[in-house]
Length: 523
Ligand code: BES
Ligand code: MN
Ligand code: ZN
Image 1 (tube, rainbow, N blue to C red):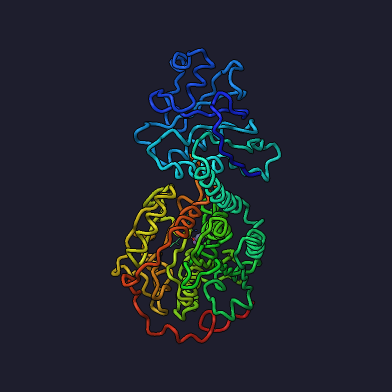
Image 2 (tube, helix red, strand yellow; image 1 turned 90 degrees about the vertical axis):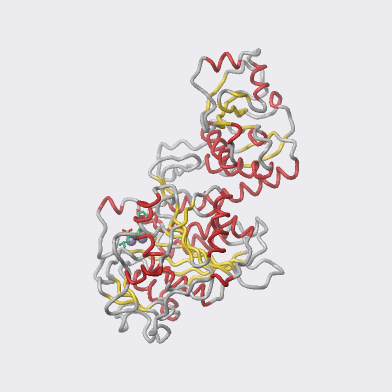
């Protein structure tokens, strides 16, 4: 379990590892260490490659015979694509290809970090570590005949010394957090009801500098978290709310707030999804997984900013106690919502969380949510939608995501679209027109953000993939963990003059009952 990394300066032909992995650029340009493989073939590598269709495209791999002339038992070539266009993310992908190819070797040595001398060496080393760990990932818990990878040791051949060692450590801590998030996303919903998710978070975060506060149903009532209670009331698995706090020594000032949607299963509720529509809905807690996973790595990464996590956890089920279309919920900040579609549940629980994060006077807020199918239609499966109320803050998020290698793209929150969620009976309804559904959801969330810079990532596409893609396997990806950690590592409190206010609603703050117009009868 887990990979350990070390830095060695041993030449490629004498490095002690089962497998030597050497980069080749397009078209068949030999990278560092390839000379050792060539020598093992008595100068015949180029001729050997001529006989194959291996060109050095990014992620291609090819095992080559070494006739026992290297200290490593075997050698594998890994394509890195066009050398003058090589990016840090290409290194992640190449490293992942090596890890996937090396499942029967315990140890692998590689020169990959040095393939592109123009890239900052620390960035390259961090990316190689991330790619190796993410590429080696498997989810085999329920497979009787699964073949777990044997890979456990990676030697990075580099003269970068301490700088490279630190970057490898950073990459491996970050990728371990990604792996935790993938694991819990891939778990079936039966294994992760809200109470169990809370217990898992406690186990993960113990000893990692994060305090965990779990609100149960009586406390949710006390805190007037009407969105969480309302969505959660249809399931026997009662809702929870996690508040996670990371306070590094010697810091004061406002915290950076992470908010994650935690719907452990989304059946749609009484506005029931189709059978096919539910097949992947165990993934609807991917935002929560990203927040919890990221928070587990803050201390090890030496993050100097205070970070608070807000994680609503519910199961959205149809039953005799479920919320009905037409019911009205009262969110923590006092605003009321007419629930016309119980399948638009994510925004209801996020409303409470965003309202709490605002009330706590966070320095800036970012939420991650598998929120809308419409966002997947707009941007496809691989790109998350980025919205927000503050251009400086959304640019910071975009830049962090770019550096982390997670693809996000801006979408607007047009103020004149607000009328699309006007309700005849409450302050707003929870659905708008079909068109622009990702924007409507963002506009809805904005109603619960008060006076803080806020960014929203709709991760409905990239959180859970229908097939392998680079260093991501089919299924849960852990999307968002790397962006959150990069954000926390480089956080600059936005100068919040930019914050665009949501439309004010007169009746807000005059809250009387927790949930709906009258007290509910159960729980
Ligand atoms: N969890 C879904 C969104 C989703 C869809 C995530 C596909 C991942 C993949 C969300 O709760 C939902 O059901 N949204 C509805 C909103 C609609 C009723 C306004 C949707 O997108 O259809
Ligand atoms: Mn839904
Ligand atoms: Zn959902």
